Image 1: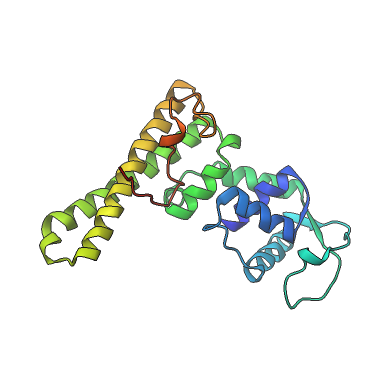
Image 2: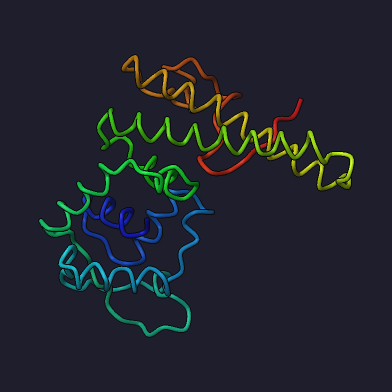
Length: 212
């Protein structure tokens, strides 16, 4: 999924490694984008070897953009190739089981604005099925073994169930919007799909417990 995200970002503009890391964090969120230079640069090298990206001219690096314990050197700027654009088009059209899990769904969702409607719907419906299965599993645990769980484990299971129920409702709203041709609401304004600031959805793959 890191390959997919990098190619998607480089479609927008050439970037050096530091910029890519910052944009991955902004695009995917701090938890999913806890990407070290040790994982980012090997992926960039693989993409170069495949012919999907290439290096452009170096630009001077500033002090705050140099990773700790590394030398002060110019920044290599990466740009996507025509083959890389074709590869990204293949990846963004995928809607298989790997796009329903937490990481896969989160990365694909981040690029939904550039995904066709039919693919978005398949991914959303697949994700909903996956979360419904997870929800039923948690209900089963709570129904059969609640009396054998300590208070903290029980609270954790309830928290997971609550997160699943919230995400199913959110996915159902997104699916309804897609089928009717509406865009999701903007949580900053509360416009469009009818959801206000106080009822914004959880980030895909994360949980949040509602409080009274």
